[in-house]
Image (cartoon, rainbow, N blue to C red; front, top):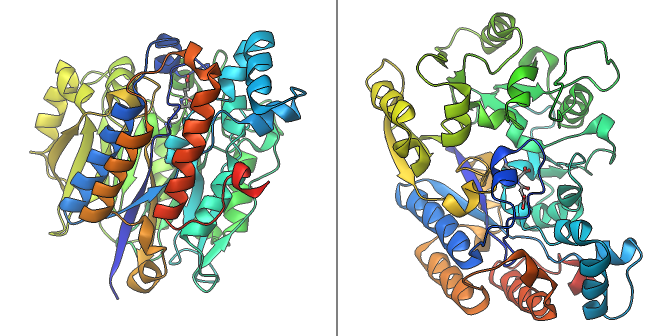
Length: 446
Ligand code: SUG
């Protein structure tokens, strides 16, 4: 049976802005209050999706969320008409207001953890939306994310959806950004590698001193239980707390895997030797490539600023692998030199393609942050909502939709404009019709 990985990229929402909301994410803090371009951001994302579809990859689209989140602001005590809620919140609590305007759902690597049917006891594809408890602006996402995922993967014969984990730091869960699956073929049982930053119920264990560890071991274990994974095929690895303190806020900023390749920085994990031995032992006899990047070749700082590891490793239709990298990797001399060398080594990675996703990069989101990977069999693929799958027609329709609804430029001060709320809702209402999602947004359900 045919089997492949489908990348579901997040469409950038109409309120894409730089508010400096993510302590521990260097780019987000550095670009706080810079002007953003929602239109350019959405188009950069669409270009990447279309280019991957043109390479022969299966590519899907996930809808963004409704922002400003007036419903969250009302929950926090702001009242009156929608316009009054925005005005009061912007004046009385500007930081909270900005958090309720973030377009952060665009980074769909944080939307959910997905386990393909080859790994699960009931042979369904399992989804658990990430609760994203560590950042208030992101903690607003899981409910609507769950609805969007159910509208895309609706068939209960193939897809199982779980509620996000309890909204508490003890179960802090950032989804697929801290989850990698290694396998010899997408449809075969693989090893699911969960990377966590701390143990919530055991403070004696190592944890970062400066920046927060967003993902806990207990959250990883809960997701593995929900997804009915076999313990013999799961590895839990502690992220190196020192790199979290240098700005590696998710594991996908320092390591990435695809099929039988794990590409990682030598400082990515705590106890690397043990972690790799466990992966190898659980993977079995098939060929497995560990590609380690030394600090001498690429420093942790260069890895963070270029996002060398926030790349997508794709298996192309001819079976070879390509790296989809942000243009920042091309601009960084050490990283560019490393990539030139990498494609000559004896690994499946033979090619690097650079993409401009600068609008997203300025908030700490590279190519890999922008996509949720879903490995599917042909039969499961046929059960996906077809209106969410990239095609020449959908690419054209979505570009026209962006041109119609998105602003060229946005400053944090513009977020209080009630017209922006109306523009966003009009855009999203139309989008749910294009993608045939039904009523997933709170404003559509009142
Ligand atoms: O959660 N940035 C996101 C970036 C997420 C990147 N995702 C992965 N690594 N998979 C975050 O820190 C910044 C928003 C702002 O500052 O306006 C933000 O939310």
